[in-house]
Image (cartoon, one colour):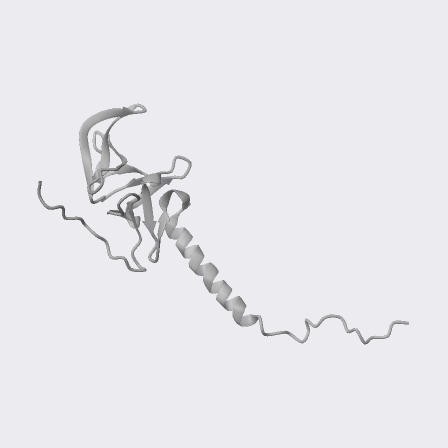
Length: 152
């Protein structure tokens, strides 16, 4: 058996990708996910890397499929429908993947939409920074009731 060469994506803040939960081999860039089924915790992807397709077919529901495994640890990740879908489309189980959000690895199956979640977190962080900057400022009009007022 020859030496194994894996494709690796840049681990920078601008690059978001999915990797194998077991061995962290890089599998697919986040931009190649074109459909996520949150209830089933599955997603349809194109341009996957570092996977092996099992040539034995089996039935999944009413469709014939070939299983897809991680090339490094042989963990089952999902399947490819037969006949092959356009653009090499595969279904990956999000429970078997981690998501690199540009700073850390997260469980892919617990995120609703990783890219949107990341953008929302950045917006939330920016709002918190603005609020912290305004905490020391007090408006004169927003003063509480005057305790020195005599009421007859």
